[in-house]
Length: 73
Image (cartoon, rainbow, N blue to C red):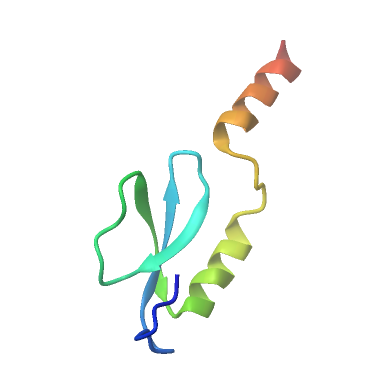
């Protein structure tokens, strides 16, 4: 994700997709299709720390839902 002209103080944002998978994206660029802003912006390290704190279940949302249905049924 880093570019050759990226600087250490470059601003990023935390993004997630419909499967609730997280990533970081440059704050000054339009979001890629299928991704939305989570609300956190900061340095790369700050954004990665936020992801580490909130993304505790790495399974995609669709898998979590199927597993919950199987457990309930």
